[in-house]
Image 1 (cartoon, rainbow, N blue to C red):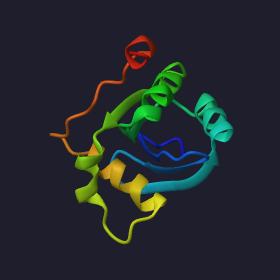
Image 2 (image 1 turned 30 degrees about the horizontal axis):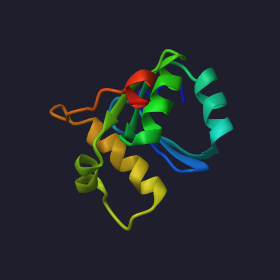
Image 3 (image 1 turned 135 degrees about the vertical axis):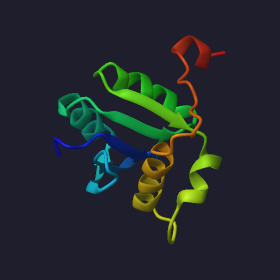
Length: 119
């Protein structure tokens, strides 16, 4: 897993599905973690790019993961949808997030600060 350069996260209320890939786009791992496990995982994981769909919860998670030194990017869900390859499930969504993020022309959403989010 030391070769991992990009991790896509499909956010949920209680569980998070991760898809990790290397610089060439090869899948390296798939994991299902709880919120606590996710924080522990990224606290000890080497610095990489983490990508999530933009939603209210993703901004909080982006701030948290950025404190561990990771580069966090958010993608609007409408840009991820075209990259879902088969029947929709959480692992396929996490893979589609990675696929969308690896496109050179992809537009990303800037994570909001805590003060911006409380407005």
